[in-house]
Length: 73
Image 1 (cartoon, one colour):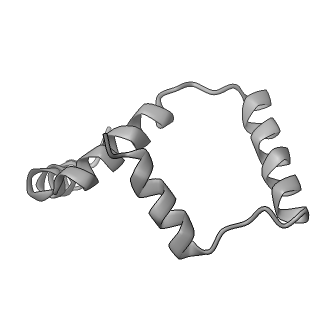
Image 2: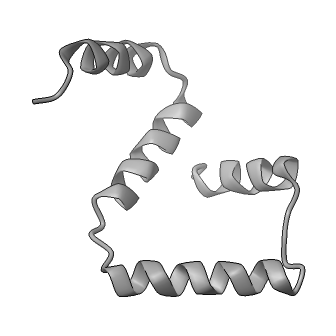
């Protein structure tokens, strides 16, 4: 059974959130419930490891800026 206190805290956060945060939460929830298979998850991990190995990486600031563009529009 879900923790009611946690639900209450999340409801409060959402009630007070700006539009950017709401889009972020909606997108995260959509991905959470997308139902990827274990094979798809494993393939994503292998792809990410290869990206790191060859230097296809971003700073935290770059990643944040990119992520914010995904949730606009």
